[in-house]
Length: 145
Image 1 (cartoon, one colour):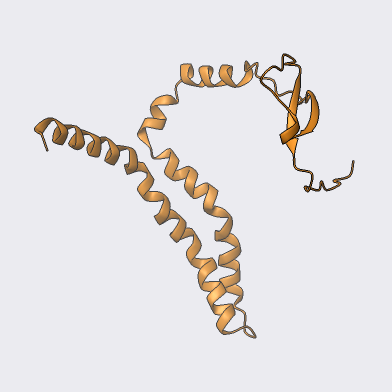
Image 2 (cartoon, one colour):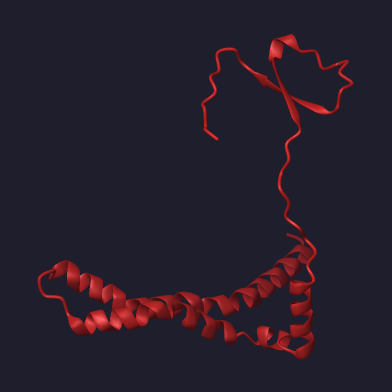
């Protein structure tokens, strides 16, 4: 490999490592928060007639903490805090509230059905209708209203 390609690869790997660095904590947080539910489920699987109240309590208290723990890890990212400025929040709010994108209803055009071997589209000047081909042995299912 030429030296230039090796240098580009090195820069790419360093930038990739910087991008991945904040993500390394999420699996650890998931395992930490999931440990009590896992222990409780294993205990209930091996001893179904003897449930443990303390394990169930720890399970119930720790299971919903995934979101809080992920938010905490997300808050540790210094790049995110640099975006948390009055100007950054104003831009985010304006982009959210001033979005003029409208999602409309789909209105299909006129469709005519014809057999594939009976149509010749080479001299068709009618661009207002779509042609859907079908096979005579194909059956359509009634999907209701």
